[in-house]
Length: 179
Image (cartoon, rainbow, N blue to C red; front, side, top):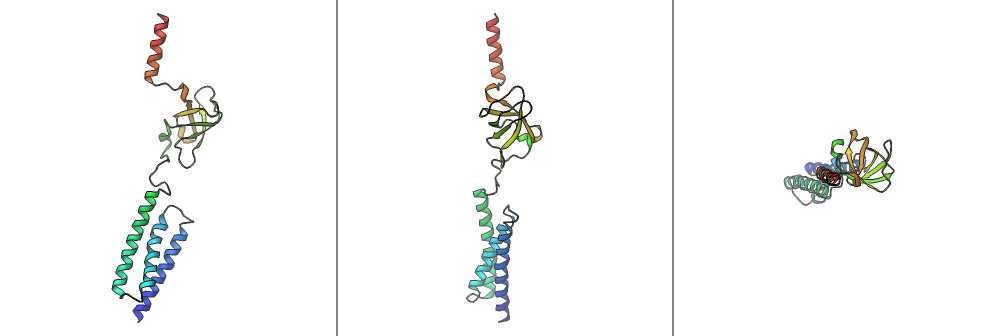
């Protein structure tokens, strides 16, 4: 009788503690508390419901299995749904990773000021920008040529970007016109 009451208290404690962890997730998002909280809550719920029916050793084993299975399942679901960007898609790890990213001008970019929105710029894709030379009009597509530490990006209009092949072709064309 004493053990049955103790078991009921443990299950009730787990139910309340699990609910508390789930609520704590609202204050510190990132799936840190939610994964453990769902496992503990589910085990507490199983314990409260099945305590009168199952013997204590079986119930304890079942509750342990429920904690593990529910926690692993919740973690798997979080990673698959990518609720907090767990796969890293759309996020940058450092300013150097911004080099070569493309975007659009949202506020005219000059050599001194402007703003762009990167196509894959992470949580906040808006960045202050300046042009390498000249002005770039609003709505024009740009590419980051210097991340500059991530605070102010140096960009160039896509229409003006040339690679080595384009430069060679241009030199050949100029040589042919001068000859």
